[in-house]
Length: 289
Length: 160
Ligand code: FES
Ligand code: FES
Image 1: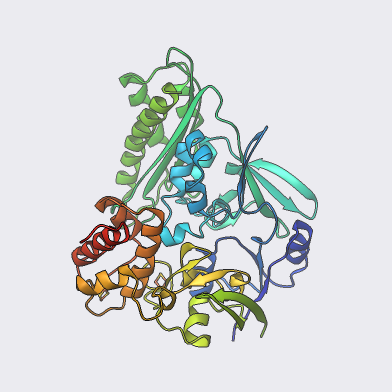
Image 2: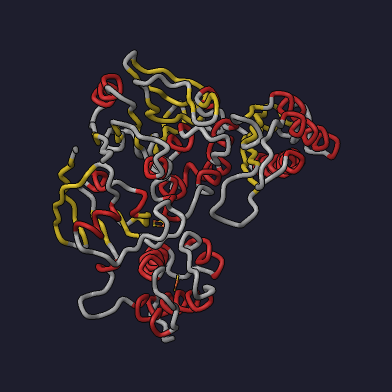
């Protein structure tokens, strides 16, 4: 019978050693809401499971000078209960809470959602739009990369076999900066995004956008960072002409799959609609700061 | 075969078990500890029939390895009543006939208790979102919602 080895190291070094020295495939376990299903279905058969949750710093939220540090395996429910982080980054925190049910929220984490590397992961576009960094540890030490550099294709990440995400750093939302994330699903709960969109904007006192980051999920093999769309917002207010250009840019960037949950035409159109709606919410929130 | 030795608290009692690393908490509860109240509807986090509290937090026991339970405190449906006295959520489910086959009921009761611990006065919308991960194929949910609100009122000390 298939029986992997389970290890729950208490230090980063120990965890990295287990990953580096595994004879067969090793998998990092954070909340497990994807991994356990994939193992049960037989899709994944790791020989070693490295549970990182006993390592100090992998669960919890700290506000530091360089931003919000969020432990890789912090469950969505705990993120949603953190008043300070939710006030600072409403889009990021709402997005993670869209994943699954209340029960799934009790386990599911940013790192799991990111490293599962589905283009439809709800928590990823929000993190990317917010400029979040992933702190990755491995046998060569620590490196910090933008979140968008982690997924490379469906189910694959840029992490080496001995590496794992230890924590995320989300910058402080300074000045009139805020964010939003929306997704389209055919039901009201418990579904996977057909399209997702996260946007962060910074406004000046007149309401003109001075900085922006736009990210789409579920419309290409990986999440998409839309530099064109950000440039459309920068220097402008939230007027009809700007929104129309944003809509067109979002649609132009889409390279979606065609399936029963959404045709190419539908996903493309919805990407434009969501971009408009998300921009409106982000502008409104930023203006209120 | 690699087994993990786990010590945790289940329904207030210190419990030890040896589990295979592929076993979930649900497997351990049902197969090794004889606690068959938690049900397996899907085994993939979709139905909520396996809901338990781990350190007070509502989770699907099918989405957690038994090995991960080390040092935790788990409450299952078997730990909700106070001895012979049903918890108000349980008695209101009975009173409102909020079950037919009963397969979803243990999970719904655990999830409702967690809801009312966190939010003693949920709106109907809040309660329905909280319980969206608990599927019931029989009741159509109306009687369940009636029971949830009646239990909330009883726990707030209002006479129903
Ligand atoms: S059996 Fe766990 S959610 Fe269905
Ligand atoms: S009573 Fe049968 S599934 Fe709910």
